[in-house]
Image (cartoon, rainbow, N blue to C red; front, side, top):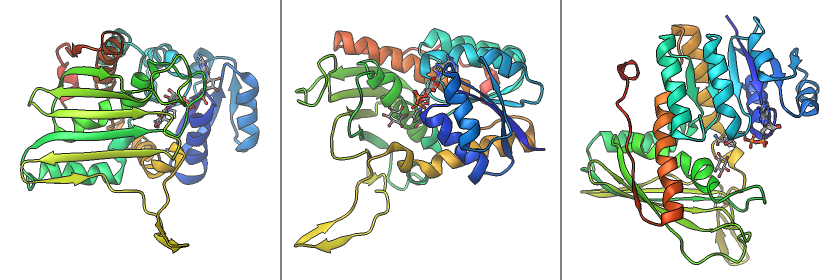
Length: 338
Ligand code: NAI
Ligand code: NAD
Ligand code: ISE
């Protein structure tokens, strides 16, 4: 059976995912689209030559009986309502991060899925599908390097536009580290603290850039993450794990090494779409395959979306207080232990 997608949000990543479902992956087809900007939805049908209906809103798209799975790629604050409506209709959902912009909102999705009784939701935390992070995790899990003690990470974007807010540094950008790092070290967070270094001259007046976040875990691991969204030179994701008997780093993106004009150089990417292109392919292929084989997605869960939302709320509080803010999760439903 082909998994028939209805896409809510045909902006930057919506188009990327439509392109990969249509031209790169197998077993999926886009049969319906919607966007609050209807012209954008109509353009996508034309651009990718889709055999797809254009709907005026998410509710009418979800009601289409030819749609099996909803791909949520609208902007973050709209995700919660669409995901809840999809669960209510018993449809599968692949939701881009964040699952919801508040912990309360993410918890309402967890509760709705548990009530439904079967897994329907996968969250777009694609770094868990990146070969570099998978290799790091295998090395940590092998215990060959001893216990992880500290992680030093950086999430750098060349620049951001005026629509980017202080909070987005946490709930749009840092959220990728929030998800992937606790998964990497098999631990839970206990606190987060924001530190504001000297501000770059390239930051817009409403912004603090760069920012540093210190996360601590139940097992005592201390994690530093630099979020620097006007770093100018490229899109650069760094992760170093310091263990008892050695250290390891996320591999650099393969690039030729050139010698020219008395300089030895390699390239740094500038576009996030390229940096994790294989991981995006892998996560959505996995979503399609798992549903076709087992009737349920098996990637990052609504509970993972909830952990990210609680941590992100605490991070945003710390941006205001500049104090260490506690991270407290409610009890994990047994539903997510299987
Ligand atoms: P975008 O602004 O380019 O596209 C969002 C689209 O959604 C727009 O076309 C907008 O009109 C539409 N939209 C918003 N609310 C809607 C609603 N209620 N119903 C229908 N359409 C709606 O944004 P972009 O960059 O594509 O980001 C979309 C989502 O993807 C965000 O949640 C973002 O965090 C996530 N994202 C994830 C990335 C990743 O690495 N996993 C990378 C980029 C974005
Ligand atoms: P975008 O602004 O390019 O696209 C958002 C689209 O959503 C726009 O077309 C907008 O018109 C539409 N939209 C907004 N509200 C809507 C609503 N209520 N109903 C229907 N459509 C609506 O943004 P983007 O860069 O594509 O990001 C979209 C989402 O993807 C965000 O949540 C973002 O965090 C996430 N994202 C994830 C990654 C990743 O690496 N996983 C990368 C980029 C974006
Ligand atoms: C964007 O929304 C993403 O998700 C990218 O992966 C991230 O690097 C970028 O900072 C976000 O704005």
